[in-house]
Length: 293
Image (cartoon, rainbow, N blue to C red):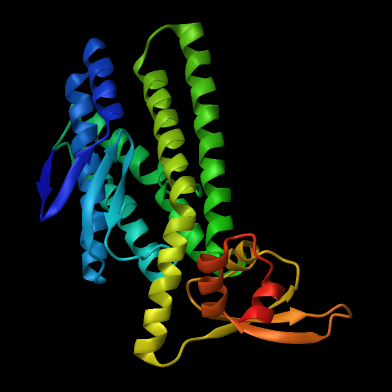
């Protein structure tokens, strides 16, 4: 569609579908206002990301939010991901507060003021819900991925987002059946579509993003010369993919093999586990990798 500050902007087809529906209802200008607020919301993410050295190359805009496409891997890095995620809701909260002050002082009244406040409220508050692909889910993933693993946390939060989207779809259809075609149910229906599509993309790319993280982590270790570490104890028959899913972006793992009597039977590094999985496949037993290294 175009570029903003060197960032390629792409609008998902569902946004044009939403615009067409709103236009049929006589709410085309309101849809354009939502579009402008979403662009501002995502621009705030980009600016904070750039301030932390993250190279954002593109944005894909959905009806209720967007997805940043980055050259750098920042997901799972607690500070960067949390701050970048919170930037969008903070932007909308700032607009909401400013508009509310103007309305209370009588400087901005009428339907447009009410719509502006209402849309910013939804963009700020709704995006803080703790599910993916919302910003609240990204903050929660940044906090939990170190304890539960990036892939597992991403899948759980994204599935929660899809369940929320399904609930919103049922709610929208129920209201329509009782009250007819109205703006509120339409808004919920497009939210449901956004959740289902964007959360599905999070699930589909979780393992690829995580492997990119681990590759960058090795480069960080070589460059810095040190990194916090953690131990994992694993039975010899466990497949490599299960070990990899327990790795975290913020620490380097050392894997201790447990023998038949749960005695120490050897040690592998995280790098050996990753290289072995790429070479032998995801189902290759970790014990066999130790024997053939």
